[in-house]
Length: 397
Image (cartoon, rainbow, N blue to C red; front, side):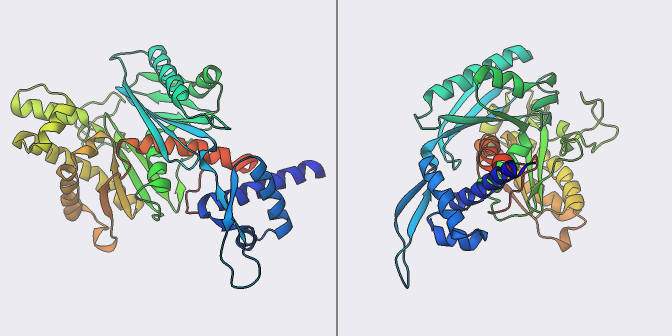
């Protein structure tokens, strides 16, 4: 790298550092940024002037000072652009429109047709995103990117869905396909990873360094944050604990294994369990409605499913030692009917339980956790410049 290129690279890094300081700590003064970052005041002032011209930073009046002139305070202009965060479910598409601070502006949901093939799902996805783009507020930067959480194995770096059994997908280059159609950057990740990011950056786990986000819906996915790092593994497909066998002689799974955790702690386990007890073939939403009305059969089913969920969670706690477990996706909507059963299993089975305090609660972002986390993927790259890395440190900045 020659001197000019090296200087440009360092300027971009410094600009990213300054902007992120304003994003997470505004209102803040130029002198405080200089003190916090170690950059000299002249460099900070020049970079801020550039950010003001780009409409990413606003001057918002004077702050307090014990001596000398009062400093001019700076504010991050989050309303200058829009991000679309998407959860691609097995039966639905959910989109959140956010500003550049991940504040939700609007939500959009639509069902997917049953037994749709990959082409039909992608067409529905493009249609839904285009509609959300049209409804986005007019801003200087427009829609700066789209993040998508997908239930399956995802090559995060290339944006390829390697395998999504519940969608019947294999080797779908989703990022490339959508970017060619939509004309904006697209980032694709596993939906549980996105849910973990959403909760860590904007939800219940902002001050938690070691977190497990368990997405329990049609299947089970796990997003893992250890030491403020979202774990990705050697090939970027860490966290598929839904296919951890909890009964080696159990029910065959479509993955080729038997007794997989998600067969016993998922929407299908709820509906099949209710059918066995009552003879009624209800949808998951109908059984969920009945549990909130204290229907005895529904309560029994969710307690059983919660116990199986707890068995898998105990294994994860013993192996990963998190300080918080967050339950997301549709199974979590049963609330204490599930979490109480999970905690009962933890109390009797967790080997490290007496030595490590672990809290278990329902996702604070609810159904938006994955979509907000997907939006966070876009924001990370938008604000990182050339210093962006494939892994994401999610510590409080």
